[in-house]
Amino acid sequence: MKIIADNSLKKVLGLPTATFLVINMIIGSGIFFKAQGVLEATKGTPGFALAAWVFAGIINLCGGLTVAELSGAIPETGGMVIWLKRVFGNKTGYLAGWTYAFVFWPAYISAQANVIALQLCKLFQINLSQQKIIALTFIVFLFVMNFFGAKTGGIITNIFTVAKLIPVIVIIIAAFFFKGGSFNNLTPILPVGENPMSNFSILGAAILSCMFAYDGWQHAGTVAGEMKNPEKDLPLAITIGITGVCIIYFIINLAYLYVLPAGVLMKTATPAADVALTLLGSGIGTKLITVGILISVFGTLNGAILISTRIPYTMAIDKEIPYSEKFAKLHPKFKTSFASFLLMFVIGVIMTLSGSFNTLSDMAMFSLWIFNVLSFIAVIKFRKDRPDIKRPYKVPLYPLVPIIAILGGIIVLLSALITQTYLALIGLVLTGSGMIVNRFVKKEE
Image (cartoon, rainbow, N blue to C red):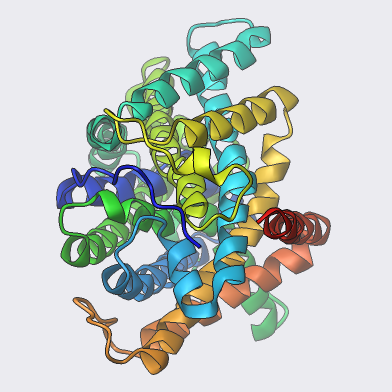
C-alpha cells in the first residue's frame, strides 16, 4: 500500500533549467583534473588520450539518448529509481534508490564540499585545519537554500552553470591565440603497445579514467515530477546537455595539449592551472582556475543536493524506508520533504567529518554503473513488455545506440573489477545491505 502524500511537488522547472541541470551535474572538478589521469593511462600519447575522451563521450551520449526514452515514457520524480522499478520490479528499483540515497549521494556531496573548502584554503591562504568547517558551512547553506523549493535551487543551478563555463571558455580562446602552442603536441596517435590487444587495454583504462568527468547526466530525471513538461523537455535536456559537454571536453583537452606537451601534462596534478599559468602569466592563471574550480564544484554541489533529497521522498511514497510517513510529508509552503533533507544532511555531515568520502565515492561509482547498465537494458525490455506506452521520444538508431551504451557500461564495470577489486567488492556489499533494511521494513508493515 502506498502512502498518499498530503501535497504534490510543484511543477516549476522548464527546459532551460533542466538542460543547465544536466550540464551542471556533469561538469565539475573532472574537467580541471582528469587530463593527467587519462594521459597517464595512455602512456603520454596525446592522440590516444583525445580518442579516449571521444569514446567516453560516445558511450555517455548513447547512454543519455537511451535513458531519455525512459524519462519521456515514465516522467515521474525519482528518475532511474522509478524506471528500474517499473521495468525490473520493486527490488531492483529499491536497490538503486538505496545506493543513491545512502551511499552515492552523501559521499558525492561531502567530496565536492571538501574540494571547495580545499580550494578556498589555498586561494586565501587559510590554515587547512579549517577545511572541514568551511566544507560544512557550504553544505548547511545549500541544504537550506534548496529546502526553500526546487525553483530556488534551480535559479542557483542556472547561474552557476553559466558562470562555471567562463574560465573554460577563457582557456580555450586564450589557447588558440597562444603563439607558443603547437599542433605537433597532438601526435603521436597510438601508444607503443606490444600488440593490438595491449593498445585496446590501454584505451579501456583511459576511457574508465574519463568516466568520472562525464558522470552526472543520469540523475536529471530525478526531478521530472517538478518539471512543467517532462515528456518533451527532459529527453531534450539530456540530449542537448550531454552533446554540449562532449564538445566542451574535447575542445578544452585539445587546448591543454596545444599549449603544453603530453609529457608535461601527465606529470602535474593540476593540468588546467598549469595551462592557465602558461597562457596568462604568474599568479593570474592560477587564481583564475582556482576560482573556476570553486564556481564549477559549487554548482555541482548544489545540483547534487537538489537531486539527492528527492530520492528518500520517492522511496517513502512506496513505504520502502523506515518512518516513511515522515519522509513522504511535504512542507505546506515549500513543498519539500524536511525529513529527506535532514537525513541527507546528517549522512553528508558524518562523511565530511570522517574524511572517508573519497573511498566511498569510488565504491559508489562502481555501484552506480551497475544501475546505469540495467537502465540501458531496461529500454529494450520496456519496449517489448509495454509497446502500448506513449513514448514522446524514442532512441535514435535503435537498437544500436542502446547496445553501444550497454557494452560501454560493461567495459567500465569489468575495468573497475580488475583495477579496483577491493573497492568494487565493498561497493557491492554496501549496495546489497539495502536488502537487509528492506526486509526489516517489510516485517514492520
